[in-house]
Length: 289
Image 1 (tube, rainbow, N blue to C red):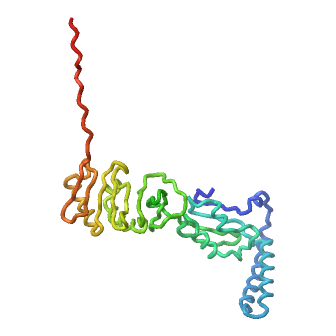
Image 2 (tube, rainbow, N blue to C red):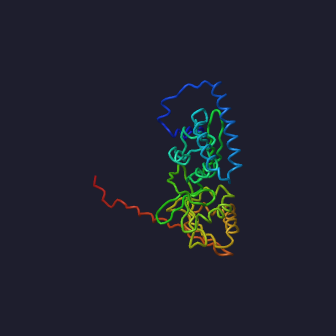
Image 3 (cartoon, rainbow, N blue to C red):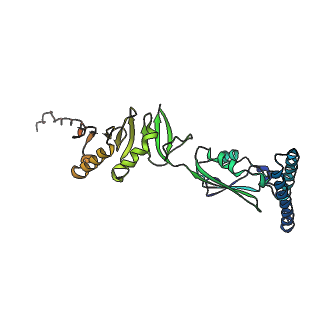
């Protein structure tokens, strides 16, 4: 399975049913002979590439590639490491190899390019080994840092602030960012507010207002404290909030809004509490005894 640390890709499932025994000493000797011929041919092909006979050498090269594929130089396996969210089918289509393909013809640069075009892949390293003839692919996948809500749709955002065009279901609480331009600007905000993890882990929503500034919602999306940050001087305003929380415990109070947009003062709005219902006394007369 591709969810494990070491994954096998089998482009031709039917061929997995039948395996033929190989006499390795004879195979090795034959493979070395074929390899020597192929190297000579490749050298000659490069020399006469621009000449009139290059077409003929190209045809010979194709014939030798086909011959060598049938005599020990076909692709035996494709091993993939590091994939968790990238599916087996996506990798099969990107790699596009079968056991009829010649290991010498495998273009690792082209495979790397196609694998890195997959939505969850950040980087890929592709190399090939011989005898056994294996293509090795090592993947580093993107990490989701936040979820972007725009036009009533949700998109995972990676650590570079870029949208990952893939389905995503979070398995733990994750920051929700809202508004046009939020992904491109979220990292600058995170660099400031992540420094104090005690307060940062209470941030549930970061709302990018009019592509200018941020409102943060703490504790609860619907009923939490909204912290209004200024357009300029965000770090200074955030430090002011941390200091007020340390000295006055402002984030422990029952507030709905903390407005930090003004330079020399902080405006707060206290949460309204529901009035207590009056206690109804028993108005029935005592029964005579």
